[in-house]
Image 1 (spheres, rainbow, N blue to C red):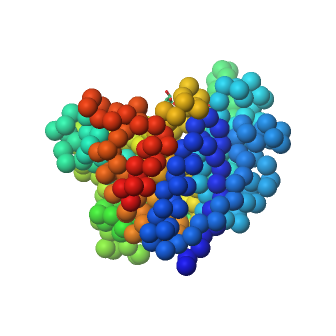
Image 2 (image 1 turned 120 degrees about the vertical axis):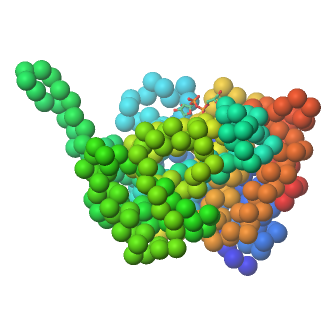
Length: 357
Ligand code: NAD
């Protein structure tokens, strides 16, 4: 039997509830597809501050590095809002991403046909549904570039620097092209090459990698302002979007809003190797923690991404995604429940996915 070692960081708020359901589904998928998961639980965020005084203990980094992959719930909450900045739960999140060298962030924006009415876009714009994968560079660009204050013409000024090296662009481009090969084989690279020198290097490098290594994948380029518009005008035109850290930050939020439900959206962050960090895009939802109202599907879909991208269990990943789709016909948590549909709790939603598997 195939065995995988998974580090599990449940985190705070609804984190433990939603992660428990994802584990239930992973175990069920293992029974069906012939693999076994060994879980190592570790602390991150507020719960880690409470137990150890820091949001990211060294043992957590060690556990994640030793594992085949990491599954994360969410961190943070009002209890820790007043701790000093460098000890905030979110610091733990940035810290673990850095420690694992996660340079590629993958965010699918998918609309399940059953939830089409949740989208803020008109049905004729959404058409048959939507399936976009935004690949965002996560460790370079203006968020990490040189910054500072200086005096310009006698007035105080501030500056941040957008900088990308060729190897940084090459590795994120490869991730995007590889992902596209598993989908519809189309990549749209988004930049601002009409204005920015860094974008001109980005565009030339992405084009070269396609020509040299991925000639079978279709590549187009789009300016970021146009892309922001096209996402709400005709989102069906996109398959994989690859872009820089700051553009990806903004466009991935826009793309995920199109799907209408924060409780449904998964994400993956990858390093060069096989292992990655998988988590829902939403936060710890302290307002509903402990009430059983949380929607576990984003975490369950994150676990499916882990099977596909880190563990090579694509068949099980497909089966979980199909099971989520079927479960949506049988019951829904409060955030996505519509009239006439059975209202279920977090645990019942997890059970429905297992049953549908
Ligand atoms: P949030 O995503 O936690 O919640 C926003 C709203 O969406 C809330 O009304 C919440 O109840 C609802 N919601 C979120 N996830 C849901 C789910 N699975 N099912 C049903 N409803 C859901 O964002 P927030 O309120 O801005 O932040 C709360 C805390 O989470 C803060 O401490 C913030 O720093 C933290 N946070 C953590 C992450 C992370 O761990 N990656 C991301 C964002 C925010």
